[in-house]
Length: 317
Length: 307
Image (tube, rainbow over all chains, first blue to last red; front, top):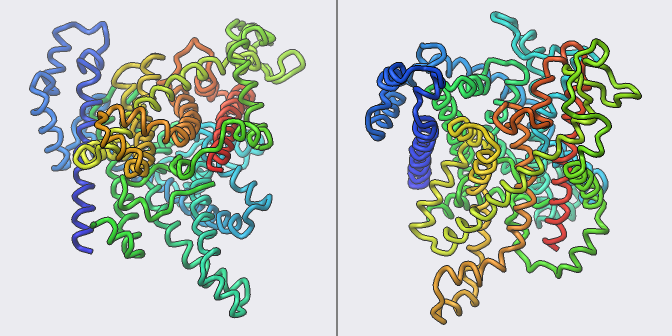
């Protein structure tokens, strides 16, 4: 177990370093002259030079990368071009807001899609199975902002049940916040329903096919008992590890949702940074999403290796 | 619908996004083309998807002749702006007095030009990457695998977004960037298909004959992994539409004044709070129907190819 853990952590660190290089390359090198990109075509050559010198663009690439990375390790994510203040506190408050939205979405996604997946598996080949699979497929392929428009039109414009914006203002109570977050959570649910219900269906079908379920049926257990005690117990564990690995993607889907619903989370931060060519903010935000994804994947892998020794042995070979 | 067994992730190349991959389709030898065509024509999923897709392709080609009004004619007279759906304007008009139905019909052109090209580019590059990783294995696979992992550690839209912001938005950038972000995804699928082929006898025979690596990869192995590549192309095409629409909505995809659904939604979104739902709802329905139709078609093809 220990060697598996070390190996898995090592791979995650390598991936993280490569990721930081890619992000740095995209943010610092590809735009060409950041001073020109930020200040625009009408800025004088002198002010562009001053800007470039201030952010250290005139130093060698490796030095720049090193000072960026060592800053991040010490908690210094750089200075935002837009706000002229440190990026880190804004990133953390954005992450906190996004976390609230993501948690609410997960609270709806998990029971709903697992329930639908099991239901589909119990009805393999019947119309209900086909309907769940088509709904899931359609939902997961429609862009989040499109399903977002649908829910806004239905719930906020036509029926006026819920507010169309997610931000409930500072100091709002729990239920006010919840009220504002329900609509933005729905597109995320739609997005992930298909994948998780499909995985649950597959693992449940596999469990239903197994020898131990046949034995349980043959020894005369009631169908409900067989499903609860033998089928679900074996089919839900893999589904749960898959859900953990999707958490990073959930955060990714937030970029669009937060723009659509005007919610001050990490996605909104990244979007505004990109629009205003605020490269330090953009890089830190994208890196934060990458780190969360890696952590989620790591947690999922560790969970599945704890639950299933075969994975662990296979990976250390 | 085939889902990858959850166990294969930990040892492989890392967890995938919430996406379908085409690995399963390569397991058996694909049926003959005529059988494929016959089975497709009997699949309701395929027929519905194909009908909608063909409708949008026709609109992309002939949209400007079909459209009842000019999709770009601006009119600011009092009754022409933000008019609700009526007999004259079935889908109403937008804040610039333009006919929404005409803009929806014409709006399929740009996205249907960009997405197939980008997907083709990504599939070609991904196939080469996957063949190289799968065939050589060892250190090459390990190093490239880490790079693929690093790119896959970010949601596709965010990678595309970052690159387009850095490079500046244009149609060409859009095609190249989407092709580039698809490359590792497709590479991963092709790699696992190649891994299954590499150990087979015909590859060993070719090696003993003294064939060079490129010959073995492209002439011997490639024809045998075409089925999963084809399926992957279909799945990716759906994601390309997803990505381009999202990027256009965010202002980093197709650029105005080219009529585009995502651009229209972001421009008219503000009108929702005044109750002008038709200006955003109809373009949104158009995107949804196009994406779903592509996925119905590729889902049906995947099922038929898998036998």
